[in-house]
Amino acid sequence: KDSSSDLIVGPHGRRLLLRRLHLRGVVVEADKMEIVSSHKAFGGKVVRFEHRSDTCNCVMRCSVFVPPDDARPSRKAPCLYCLGGLTASDENWATKVGAAQEAAAEAGVMLAFPDTSPRGPEVPDGDHPLLGYGASYYLDATEAPFERHYRMYSYVTAELPAVIERHFGASDVKSIAGHSMGGHGALVCYLRNPGAYRSCSAFAPVSNPSAIPLPAPAWRAFEAFLGTPEEDRWAAYDACELIKAYDGPPIDLLVDQGAADPKLHVLGARRLKDAATRNDKVTLTYREQPGYDHELAHFVNTFAAEHVRYHAARLLADE
Image (cartoon, rainbow, N blue to C red; front, top):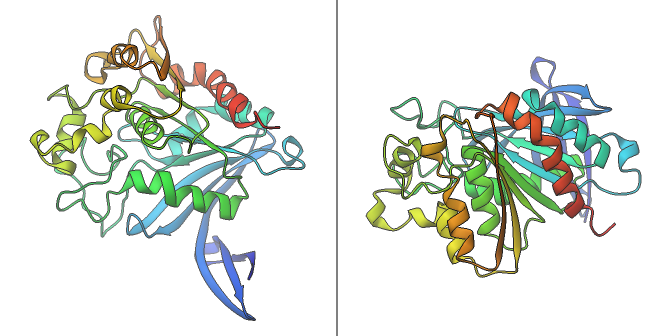
C-alpha cells in the first residue's frame, strides 16, 4: 500500500490536490482538496482550501498557515488549531492576527483556522443572526434540523486534523486555542480529550454557557442544538463543568480576558477561576488585561505571539 499527492488545475482555475492510494496497482482517489487561494506571509504561506466533510455532510473551508521550509528542515511541523468566534469564518484569524503567523514562522509551527460552522445550500441556518451559520459552538448537535450538519466537535477533533496531516504534511502533534466562542471550543476539545493536545489557551472564552441564560447567545444556541437544559447534554460542552469533573493527567490552561470587554458578563470567563480551584489537576493561568476589549484584531493580536510561543514550547518539547 503506497500513496501520493498531485496538484492539478480544476474548474475556474483553482487547484485540486488529489490524494491517491495505490492498492495492488490500482489507483483510487481517496479524497480531494480544492485550493481556493494561497498567499506568501512571513516567509511561509497562508492557504485557504475546501474539502468535502463526511462529518458535517457538506463542503467545509479552512485556512492554514504553513511555516517556511527552513524553519522545519528535517521534521514535520506540529499544528496549532485556532478556533474563531461567533459570526467569524476561517478568514478572520488568517487576516487579522498576523502576530500569530509571525511567531509561528519563527517557531516552525503550522496554524490551522477552521470555519466556525458548516455552510451551504444543504445546511440549515438559524432563525436568529447569532444562531446557525458562524455560530456552531463547536458541538455535535442532537436536535433537528441541525443534527446532520452541525457536528463541529467531531470535525475539529478528528476529521480536520486528519486532512491537515494528510495534505499539508503536519505531524500528529497538536495544540488548540480559540477566541470567544472559539475559546469555548478550544477548552471543550482539550478537556474532553486528555492527551490528544499538548496545550490549550483561550482569549475571552465563553466559559459557563449552561449557567448564563438569555440574552447570552450561547444559551439560545445550546437550546437549538442540544435541547432544553433539563435534557442534561449541556455539561459536556461547558468548560467550567468540564474543569470541575476533569480526572485525567495534570494540565495547564492559559486564558487572557480583556478587562474592558463589554461581553464580559455573558462570557463568564471569571468563573473558570472558581472551577479550577476545585480541581488540583487543573492549573489555570487567568489574566485580565487592563483596557483591552474583545476585538480579534486588537486584543487577540496583541497577545497572540505570546500564546503561540506558549504552545510552541510544548509542541516542540521532544526536539
